[in-house]
View 1: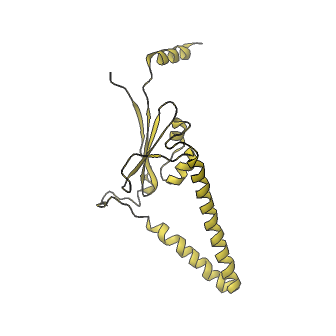
View 2 (view 1 turned 60 degrees about the horizontal axis):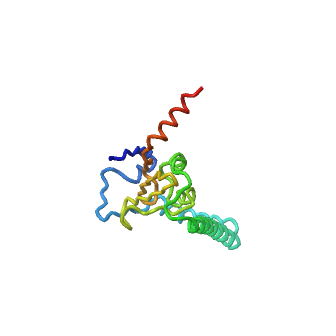
View 3 (view 1 turned 90 degrees about the vertical axis):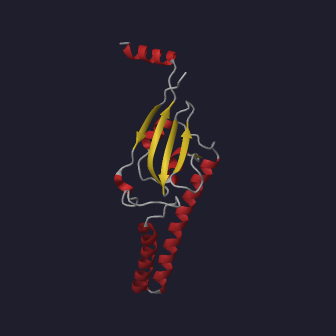
Length: 178
C-alpha cells in the first residue's frame, strides 16, 4: 500500500539572493558569512569609539566600550537562554508543525528558528556541509524540513502524513452539516 504524503514547499524570497548568486559554486560545500556582517559591525564599533574619543576624550571611549560590551552580553545571554530552553525538550520536536510552517519566513537565522520551536532540529544532512537541513516533527507525525544556507533559512517544506479513511469521512460529514 503506497502512502500519500502531501508536501507544501515554500521557496525563499529573493532577500538573500544578493549573497548567493547562481553563478557561484561551492566546491568545498561551505558558505562564507556575507561580507556586510563581517565588516559593518567591527567598522561601526570602531566609528563609535573614535567619535566618543573626539567628543568626550578617554571618558567617552570608556563609555563606548562599556556600551559595546553590554550589547555583546545581551546577545550572548539571549543565545544561552534559547539554547537552555531547547536543551530541556526532545530533539527535533515541535508542538505544531503546521503553525511552525506558518511562522517561518526566508532569511531568518537558525537561532531564531530554534527560539520559535524551543527545540534543536534533527540534522538531516551531513555535518558541516551546505545546505544544512534540519527537521522538526509534531505529535501527528507532520514534519517541517528547513534548508539553511550560511545559517539563514532558504526554503522549507511541510510534510503531513496521509489521513486514514475514517478520519477523512468524519471530517467531510461534519463540514457538510448545517
